[in-house]
Image (cartoon, each protein chain N blue to C red):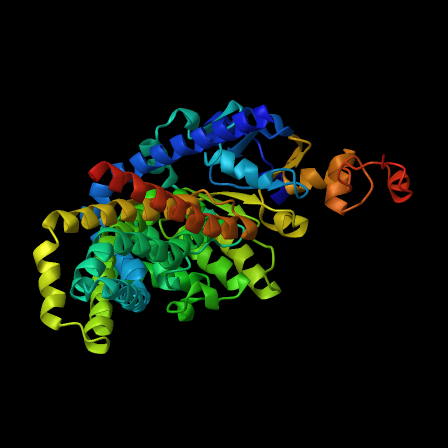
Amino acid sequence: MLREIYQALLEFVRTFGALQLFFLRLLRHSPFVFVKRFRLVVFQVYNTGVLSIVLIVVCGGFIGAVLGLQVYSNLKRFNAEDTVGLFTAFALAKEIGPVLTALLFAGRAGTALASEIGLMKATDQLSAMEMMAVNPIPRVVVPRFLGGIIAVPILTAIFTTMGILGAHLVAVELLGVDVGAFWQQMQQTLEPSDIYEGIFKSVVFGIVASLLAVWEGYNALPTAAGVSRATTRTVVVTAISVLILDFMITASLL
Amino acid sequence: MASTKRRWRPKLSEKFIEVRNLDFCRGSRHIFKNLNLTIARGKITAIMGTSGTGKTTLLQLITRQLVPDRGQVFIDGVDIGKLNLRELYKLRRRFGVLFQNGALLTDMSVFENVAFPLREHTRLTNRLIRHVVLTKLHAVGLRGAADMMPGQLSGGMERRVALARAMVMDPDILIYDEPFVGLDPISMGVIVRLVKRMNKALGITSILVSHDVKEIMEVADCSYLISNGKVAASGSPEDMRQQLSETVRQFMHGMADGPVPFHFDAPDYEEQLLGRDEK
């Protein structure tokens, strides 16, 4: 029993170390790829980011709407329904926006990245590249990684904006909160530092979500079962890491 | 007359690839034990063996996709185990490899697949690239499929596109991993002739991994039969036919009984069917 725990711990430390080395490897190639292979990066921003916009817009809008509804019904008891805008914006910008965007990104784009790279490996495409003297890390992995890093903060901004608009729709248009109060409370109380916190989180989550997706894909067993396992693990591991990191960042910034 | 002329005699200067005392294990399974072989410059060398003998593994060792446990691989006199990544990639530009399943890049068209090495390694103009790619595609009979995606091709067509891609950089060494599997007789004939022609006209050293005895006998100048992690026999096709060793005869004539077991290691058949091996 003790031995099994020890083994599992050892395995975890080993994997974590390998992940860090992989991360450094990606970073080392990143400037070159960004400058010389910018077109590949742009394509991946499209692939991971632009194609996720519909999901982000719909989810953001409805999350904001339901948030507005809940906050309104609770604040009404204290006759403070004017602050609906403030509360929803606060929650969306600092927590819900970055976290949910990262989770949705992992589900929509992370799985696609992991399975694509895993399948390229399973069908010898990565070996073929190596044999053609093309290193697959800068050609295949780094553009996807950078594309994800660029896409997530932008998607987060879209998500948060849509969330606030959703809350506005419910609170102002349907429930009759004063439109001036909705926006004014938000502007007066929300500090730039709150926004910066959200941006910082979205950047960190973007790095984590993209890194884990390409890592799982690149290290997938080259079989059908291996690729499906990598895809599942991408979502699970990203979700856990993002939520743990969110707590740690929030705690350290307070 | 022809047979004496084609008889394979290794000379020192003719060695292009040399594998020396190679050991390789996968897990606890010993795949190669003290393997030695040489591949002559400008010749077609076939590597044969039953499935599971590690033919593909040997190719991966020769191209250093895998690193041997012991022993060396020399290419043109250079020990590839000692090269750094940059030098290795430089060396690999001289290789063309045809993978067992083609390994085309699925997110690019046939044309872009063949153009891929040129775009990565050269600064040719688009016009010139188009020229070269169409020439190579024409050679494998698929110029008309240039705009198709790999997913739309049949297995045999994929292999032919991969062959065009392997040739596009005009390599010194062409490595074919099971090139004849799953080809229809017409494509097979074309590919066999193409392999021969490329070797004759351009002097490309070719390594052919296969177990299609008939085709190998047709194209190869020299062949190695690998069994139990060692070279069981080698020589020109005529030599191989005349070899008296049991292993060679079993392989060349496709017999189930012989020194090479058809069955993978297993407990006693009768005991297992009667359930006596369960405890």
